[in-house]
Length: 236
Ligand SMILES: Nc1ncnc2c1ncn2[C@@H]1O[C@H](COP(=O)(O)OP(=O)(O)OP(=O)(O)O)[C@@H](O)[C@H]1O
Image: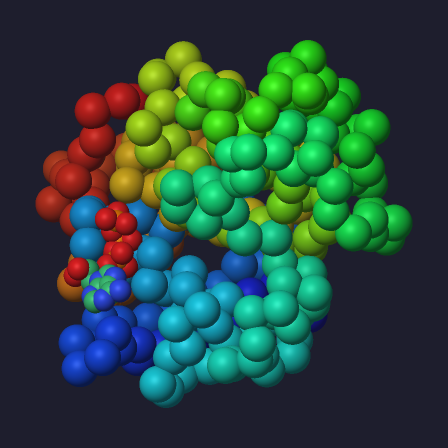
């Protein structure tokens, strides 16, 4: 069976700056895969290359067995990828409920009702403007909106960023629940300890190159190695 996501040998540039140097990674069906690395390692660029927001110069991106390298971001999303970018990008002037009005996709389990069941806090705050939500609530809203498209693969870029530790735990529980529901997840995190608690497998990027590809548990158990590769984060 082919992988949900199969990325091979990506080279991506911003102008003349060569950022990714042959990045490869895979997500198999039902897997939660962590992509780790320090600030500026190239994690977001990898996601942008997959989504074709910054198309790679060479290398390939296969999604659900189809070559979608440099396809339009819309086509990639419609193929079944839910992407929650860094910084959340919700509509601050619209209410929670309005933010959740996306074209319905009835092919999967996620509807506005099941979303409100999963995120009771969003239901309570459904008439509040997005811009008035806390950071944690905004992250939940961004994830909820991606889920409504019933994606087969969910890509989350630094969901813990800027959140208080207790809220981070809540977001992580939500991600664990996604996995339990059978969703394939690519979790991009600077907070290595946190991501490794949930992940089946992990990759570590450094200066645009993969320096680790293996079991999440093994990396988590080897603190010295993790520190050397990814930098250990404050919150465990
Ligand atoms: N729009 C851009 N133009 C030029 N260089 C960029 C641009 N965006 C990012 N870079 C550079 O590309 C490199 C990789 O950045 P990227 O955002 O992919 O890293 P990251 O691992 O996601 O880090 P962070 O955790 O800070 O988001 C960095 O050196 C960064 O300065």
